[in-house]
Image (cartoon, rainbow, N blue to C red; front, side, top):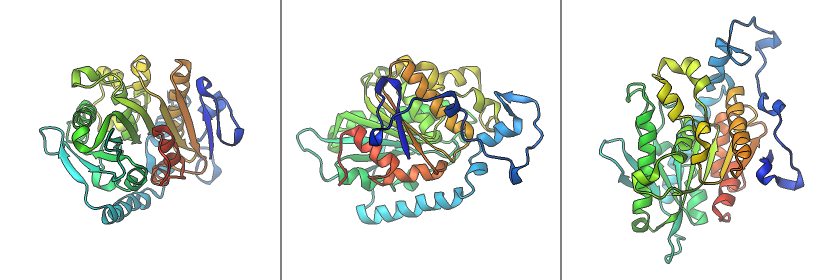
Length: 334
């Protein structure tokens, strides 16, 4: 693992620091099977033809152990519930899917309340459930924070529209802010984390009109976004357009990198070196754009980790993401 911070806050573990380069931004492409170079078709995005671009937004191509790791998410989540107990379940909206799981800490400061981390799960906008993302909960509750995982509609049930997903995620965060005191939490210490399409949705939450939702503009005090998408132009050109009904308005509104002026908190961005080239580039380009805009950003790169393995490190206080999120929240490992 190596860590680098953007030029506005350039430090790294073990006294080693480096700046992002154009070589970094293009790193991570997988070789063709058997080492042979497949004949390339017409270019669709940068140096990619349609197949390369489709593959770059299909995690199965670069993470053949996807199902195995997703299975661990579920079984490890069951084990965490067996140790911590069932989560509190609360509704944040009118539809059945609009509910969230809360794993409360018992180490809260009763005077101020506990900090809160809201985790937005991934699943290519198509799948995923809060119950399968309990596995990081122990890291937070043992360190003195509440851990919250909302459920939300998937894009298929929304008729191909990503906007209802983004809106529900924002409403869930606003609900947590309104109800934080009643939950033993601190409304002034709400943090956001997300993985994959959940990192995309988490990014769109950072550019929300929070006063319109009854929350302050800086309701989110920090965010950790892992392996996400922050500009939807290439995604729209990929095979994901077969199930997402992209429009120009949707693409622009939900491309977080185009709205940097609205971002009001420090970010930790992360990806693994075994991820698709586009997921690596998206993260590095977003980090570079934030740094250029003088926004506080830290880039965490997991050597040897694929897309799904990166998320598992959030459950370990000494793992890549676990260490980063505790540092961001000002917490110490239990």
